[in-house]
Length: 439
Image 1 (cartoon, rainbow, N blue to C red):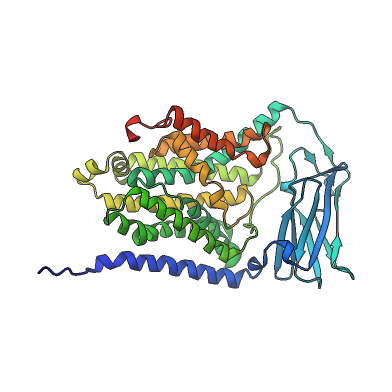
Image 2: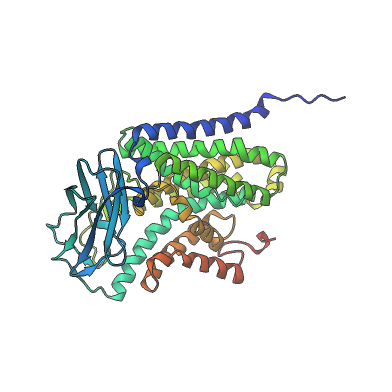
């Protein structure tokens, strides 16, 4: 009778999975100690006291403006309603509270006076509610021509598309080499932003050090997930549909772990510039936007060189094209897939940091909000093709931003779903895909 021995290598996946879970738990503890306010950022309806008011410009209500209330060890935020009103709950009326109106959340057609005060301090009296209004009395609504708006939003769409491409390229690589539609890729985007927040706000490191560390930790996170979850499942011959279902469950689990870590509110990364660069005409770009676009272009160019010129890059393209033929040619498919997971996670982590500055802010479900856009970009460009994902991301990004000229901004992501359906109907292989890729 044959005896099956469990080798040291067979124990590695379970150890790697344990390491990943232990790392997430450690991050949760660090956030709990470093950011005591995060757990308190909940719905204001549950608190006995509240700060309310209105935001108006030239007598008209401003909807969708972000209001942040900060006190000792507590932060909460909300957005103004259609009539310009807001109400933010707080747990106590003791002490001094700071109310801040986010300038970037104001409509682009509102001009704010230079001397306008966006931050005020208030104290409660005998009642359970205190009221403060933000009245932009000297503000004027300016009329912007259609072509100026189109140009401005096209540039913003290019910025958004480049950021989206970083995540979509990794998603496309994973699909091309493993056949897995990874629904947990959005959480990998969130993970990058959270680790940047951990190193910067939690540990006090400069943001230019925190971001590379976040990318490195994201790469290790991808390596751990492959070693602990995906490689063992692949070796057992699990089908792609079952793997996709596992990715959906992993997405839900990670999402609520992230919520446990930072709560339901929005956290801000330090170092973001809100100053509009002058001299660009109708185009409204901040220094952060320009740096984000430059980083995206450099990273994408470096990735293209790696994919086309290096030995491992050529092996990755071979595996993506035909895994069986690549294995028969002597390529270590498992090693290539491992590298793909590391690269995909690193790109997703960097995308999460840039997305946190573009939104702006970090939320526990921020990656999920762009997951549909990533799939739309990958489908539009061509399933399994990295360069197709780049082209598709830029098109989707510009479409999302430009579409707000005709539809409400709350519905702009619906355009990605329309693109997804149209492409599947008329050209399912995508722009750069090949017809034989679709079974």
